[in-house]
Image (cartoon, rainbow, N blue to C red; front, side, top):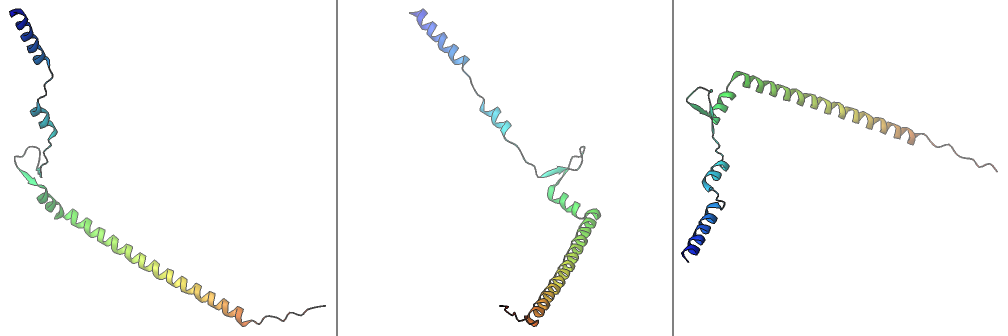
Length: 119
């Protein structure tokens, strides 16, 4: 009886020891990603600059301001070209309408020749 109880005890211990165990702490830490709102000034510095401040610095730089001016000039030129094209198109349409009206007047002014029936 003692041998049977000790054999069952050892069998239960082996089942408990060999069962798969998942460690929830280690797996949960890998899934979590941290998003920082700072960026390093350079790779050897101790401090960091926030993204908003870095954006303001970039926007105040002469290169950025120059590119903004160039973009505005390009937009203005495109708008002027589009306005000129629209004016030209309107003029062409008006000329075509005048020509069409003139042709209609010509056709209505010319009397139709009398048709005689020959028998």
